[in-house]
Image 1: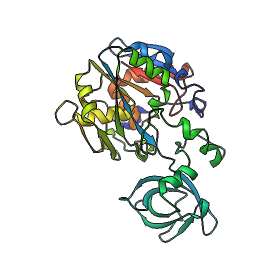
Image 2 (image 1 turned 180 degrees about the horizontal axis):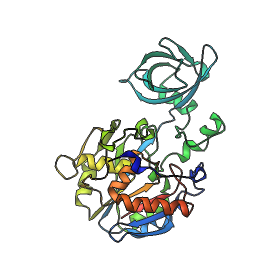
Image 3 (image 1 turned 180 degrees about the vertical axis):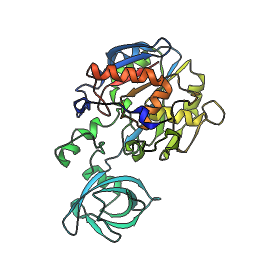
Image 4 (image 1 turned 120 degrees about the horizontal axis):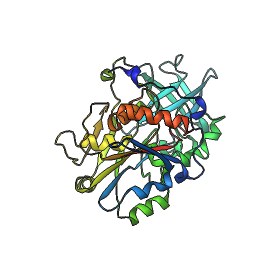
Length: 342
C-alpha cells in the first residue's frame, strides 16, 4: 500500500488558524458508512445521534504548556518543545528549533533567570536538556510556557500563544497533564452538549492517552506498512473498560480514543483495563474490535491520522468526503471542523 495514495491537495486558506468562536458551533460532516450518505450539520446537533445504551469514549489527557523560548550564549534564539521527562528528575527530552548548531554542554538561557544545559543529542530531532528553574518545572511551565500549537497554526509572537490558546487548545474535560498536542476532536464539546448527552442516557467514559510529538510527523515511508509510530502512554480503567464492553454502541471521540480502546482489545478481542505504551498504527485493512463510530477532525494528507480514518470509514468514501469538505469550505486540522463517522 503506497503512502502517496493518501495524499490530497488542500488550499492553504482552509487551514483553521483560530478556533470557532463557540466550541459547539463548529461545522460537522456526518457520514453513514453503510449507505455512503453524507450530510453537513453543526456540532450542536451531535447529541441527536445518540441515546440509551450508547457509550462515548473521551480522552481526558491535558495539554501541558510545553513550548519555551530561550537564547544561546551567542545570542541566537532557540525554540523548545518539551516532549517528556526523563524519569522524575530535571532532565527532559526536547525538540529544538533551530537545532543544527546546538552542541553538548551548551547553555540555553530562559525567562526569569532559568536555564537549560544541553546534556545529550538523541537523534537529529531530539535532545536531552537538564533544566534549572526555581521551584518545580511544571510550575515554571505554567508561568512561562506556551501552548504547543502545531506548526501550521501561525502566531505573530510568543505572547500571542500564551493567552487564548492556553484555554482553547484544551478540552473542557482535560484533567490528566501529559500531552504535547490536543486530542482535537474533543475541542468541540461544551458543557451544554455534554449535559444533553447525559440527559439522553448516553454513557460517558474517560480514557487517557498522552499525545506525543509523533502526531506531528508525516508518514515518510514509501510503503504505508513500513511506517513506525512513536509510542504513547495510555491508561484505561476497569470501570471504563466494563462500560465499553457492555455498550450497545461505542463512539470514540478522536483518533487517540480509537487507538486506546483498540490497543486494549488487541489480545483478547474485547476491551480490557490496563496501562502502558502503545505504538498501534491503524491503516486500511485493520480489524476494529471495539469502535462502532468515531468523531474526528480533518487531518493532514498522508498522515497516520488520515490513514486511521480511511481504515474506519473506507478509503474511497473518506476521499469523497474530504473533497466535499474542501468544496463546502470546511475548516481543516486542529482548530477546524469535525466529522462524525457512523
